[in-house]
Image (cartoon, rainbow, N blue to C red):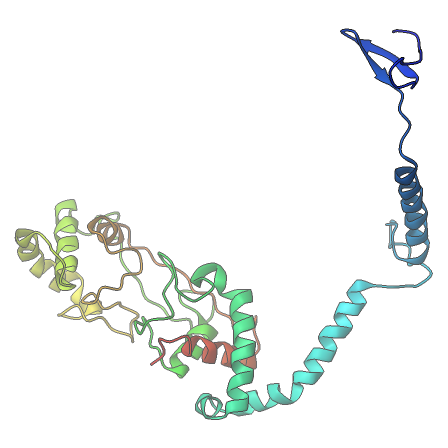
Length: 288
């Protein structure tokens, strides 16, 4: 440790610390910085006194102003609900078709539906409803369970393979994983599904899979692979696929039988909110 001394160049006293010939100057803090520092201390003490600040075992210090952001938010939410009460009531009484015909109700339903979609549906279906592998695209006209307003409302209400007593239910068997058919037969069926949608496929595999398809798939997807909305079975003749359209993706679906879950929003959302959400989804562009 070196002794403190006055630096010849700056005239500032050193701290006494020296390393490799370099001496540390004991330069005082700028007065403006110290002023702000002390002001912040005074402000913090004042905040502790005026506002809720210190946690305790059973509560917290309320402060002289007794201010609460939670109470403020609760009051704002209550006021918003009161302001919307009339439109909510009208939405609840109107049928889905009446909502579509009434410009004011439609505007209210779309605004509320957009908010509900952002809060509850975006993580799976995307911000614009474009979907993702395993999550349906809500912008097109391809629907597993129907795209009318009533169909969409019902799907939102009961979900798909969810915990609702009346949930929509369908089952894609894991043909390969569960040993229902042989591995070569899974490969042939995958080629046959590609062929149904007009894509290139091994003609020999397609020919071998005709009987396989009739025996294992036609009951749900139909003899021509057109699917069934009543059963939630997709149309295999179009180019829209839920889990991917490549040969590997189709084979994986036949082998493993992926069965996604659409939550039931009954009990989580009010009937009026479900109506608004159904109207919003229907108007994304793909509703029947």
